Image 1: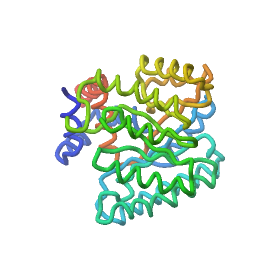
Image 2: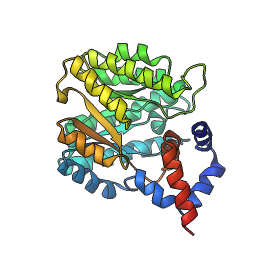
Image 3: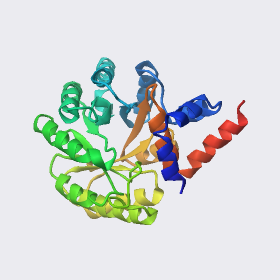
Length: 308
């Protein structure tokens, strides 16, 4: 299986230097990363809005080693909020944040991450949008869920992400599927041990369906994060069975992947949100996109071989 090997490489400084220097890298990175700056990503959000699409924006970068870097991440999101406010894009674009960027892994990281993310959530609410807390590896989830619960006391629209490959997630879904909640379900993109996560794709998919049913039958707002046509069709059927209207849940897909499907689902009346990442520290995000789908890796390999 190539996925675990690629995920291991995502933590290797040697591989980071090699991939960054490879002549075909930029072509592939540009497929998944919308730009390096706010100025580059805003026109993409505007174009998506013109097509009936919404966005969730992620400032990439997870390898935070100092409190100053965590504060810089906070400030990058606050800059993004200000730009969305000026352009009146708040209702069309929420934000996704990884708490590792806000200092979660540092000493006193739980309190530091909460202190750094709160002003972003507050600023987002002020312009009519919200924040979703991305799920990372399983060791961070108790902290993430606790921060999510704390933020929802003042900002109940704050969302979170759950991952179908983890054994714990069905219980998490039942707890989270309450009135007013916003929950994104994804398969998962971190290297997790067999003691906590399914390793077989078929089992992960079955869990995804079970969890989607829990969310659809609950009282919250499900966000279906998948590019798999079969899982998308199943989610639509589960929504119908649960009596949900098309605006009572949404689909989310990554920028640069199955763009025609983004348009198709929006044209059918679904809410369709494009997960749009930008920034200069793209390596970890990029490697997980390669690990998720072998075709992405083949595309990258061909690009390296044909550039020089």
